[in-house]
Each structure stands twice: as structure tokens, then as C-alpha cells.
Image (tube, rainbow, N blue to C red; front, side, top):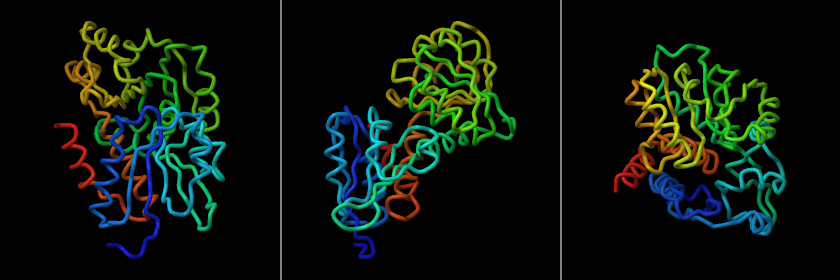
Length: 287
């Protein structure tokens, strides 16, 4: 047991939350770090239920993981939001700092870290220093994706959205982070994907299935790296079609893993035990 750390409680918040693999990842980390008194749970919370829950957080908490649909709703409930999370417009991590009945709650974003780390796994020496990129979807994860692509040297990605009329929030986030995306309808995505060095699908599970069918029927080779952030099924139809066309695919659980590793570091002050967390994730996904 580690006697040097006193914060022992953490959780993932979202709705629905039963599918979340965050408890598995964080519990594996605590076991590897021998933080025997630490406990991580999943709490199903709607946007309406969120304010009283946040208000109840005290010094017994180490932090919160935040998933959909709360990544934006939680921001005004916090005492401070770190600059990256502010410009992205989404918080997926809350750190509990200080003691007393009402500690300071700090919002952070580790999704950007996770996307960068996952894409780098698929990139090679042949990837240009300033790659071209296509982003599928225009929601909260797309905002984190734009920040990640900027870090990878791509400040001018093309975003393919189901509704161009709903891209205002993403456009404003892009402006805050100095990224200049071009917006196109999702129906044009397959043509743009063929020419992209990096492709990130932020669509929900099943949301890219039609694109997968179109890609398979196009008969054109691809050579870029695809990250599909959806991980159920583990290899999405889009990922399968991409590999068959000659591209490199990074499955969505790699982003999930890396963002959780960074969350563990921020919450515990210890480097996230990648091997232990990866092993637990692999076991869960192959069962």
C-alpha cells in the first residue's frame, strides 16, 4: 500500500456509461502502481444531474473522467479550465486539488494527447512533416482532433460533416486554436480520404458504415493512416475497408488507452503504467 498519497476516489461520468472501459483501465493502473486504497467507478449522470454531483465532490476525490454528453456541460461548473481544454471547448478530465470541504476543480483535456499518440503509432518515416488530413464528423471529439492534427503539423484539415449548418461550434473552436479547416458535406468524404495522409473518424459506432461500403466499391488504393475513434466493434467496417485498400489503420482503443494513461498521470502524479493498462484492455476486447 502506498502511504504517500491520500486521494483515493475517482470515477467516469457519462450517460449511458455501462459500456465504458475507463474503470478497467484505471483499476489496472492502480493495481500496477500498488495504490491499494484507490477506487474507480462508473457513474451514470445526465446533464441535468451533473451540477449537484459536481458540487458534492470533496477532498476524498482524486479526479473525474468525463465522457459524452458531458464534456462541454461540465465546463461552467469548474473553478478553472486549462488552456488546451478551453480552446478545444471540451473537458474529459477533472482534477481535484487542495483540501477542505470544497477543493478546487480543474478541467483538462487528455483526448488530444490520446489522438496524437494513437496517430503516431501508425505514422512512419514516409509521412510528410506537414501532412494533409481529413476529419469525419464535427462534434466534441472532432474539436480535440483538430488540436491533435495541429500538433502533428496539419493546421488546414478538411472536415466532413453530416450537417454543415451545425459546424459553428467546431469552427469557433478551430479559430481559437489557430486551425483553419475546410468544411465539406460527409457525402464527399470518400474522395477526400483517398488523398489524405491522416484520416480521423470521430463518428459514432456505425456512423461510417456507408462510407466503408463506398470506399470498398471505389476500387482506388489509399496510403494514409486511419484512426477510427469508435472501438465497438474493435475493427470497424471503415477500418477493414481502409486496410483492404492498402492503408494503415489504428484502431480506436489506442486513443482510449493513451488518453487514460495521461489521465492516470494527472490524477496520481505517477507515470501511467502503459503495459499493465494495455494488457487489461487487450484481455477485455478479446474476451
